[in-house]
Length: 446
Ligand code: HAM
Image (cartoon, rainbow, N blue to C red; front, side):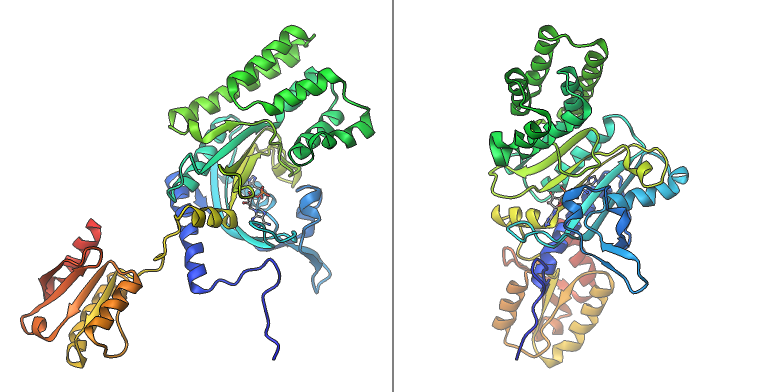
């Protein structure tokens, strides 16, 4: 008999997979709340038009799009950014600024399935609207770092590469390139890691070969990995080239924003998570300024997260002129990294307590306590059938419960139960009418 399987690039979430994903979602939500972000969601199916030309060619080619029964062109959402712009744009006047919103949601892209890339995946999106200055970047990069550090990942596990499309445009303008040429150069920079010098071929076809001096300067820019070097490269060009006063002041203002972001993150103790890297330009069409991506340090995995500033998108989608910055982290690469580092807990769905019950006679007493504990919000498990004590203790250990409550006939005759700490197997007796308080104490301590 034929059995049905899920579509390529789509995942089934058996309970253990579900609880691993839930562990990731829970940590992300915890971090977002700590940073004062509010959660929202929106439909998974959107008008196709929301994505065409706004997200960029790469995503457009990957849309799960179709005509619905009413003849509307629709698409499953490939990302949250256009949607959140629509939501914020529609109520921008009434929302208190800065608007700090987050979501945890599922997205669909018809990509070639490979390690870390699927066709259905989840993202945490965090975005700030209404703040034009680099303070928004500081807040978001700090939240991105905490969204990963919250799992126990450190600066030795991942880092954030920070780049700046404005700085690139101002720099290329100072070198004498027009807007169209600059765009072509940036898309070559984007491809350089994969293709080497061939990345500049399409630029050469459209605009002629880059001269040696310009090529050397562009390569020096995207080779830079620290801020002092970036500043001195630009300062050297101020001396060597005829740079107009406007180009010079635009570049200086950009460098001041860079100093603010790096200084803010340093003050938060996060400096070592961040690396200057102008080779990051981001594929999505709507980015306008600072852009950033997070990667694992070993370089085994595809990007963990990506984001940046997109000051024109809310307006392009019919809303007011509203500056915006944001990022998204994916659950697939995050999950792989946690597994690799041994940071995915195996008992993500463990109960708080396991009740070990002597026999049928002890069941009524145990049931009364189990129900009271569950009503108080504790997760309690017990065996449905009568089992030998040994088997019950084994089941308690396998469940990952922190505590076992033992209902033996002798204990009950004395008006007590035993409470066992499963981590060190120490036991003590507690009076029956103190069970709830004792459990509360024991779990608060651990
Ligand atoms: P993105 O770089 O396309 O940015 O995606 C962000 C993250 O989502 C990636 O780094 C990756 O972890 C995950 N991701 C993307 N595609 C897939 C896939 N096919 N399979 C598994 N994981 C995937 C955006 O989506 C922007 N909208 C982020 C943003 C929010 N910018 C501003 N606000």
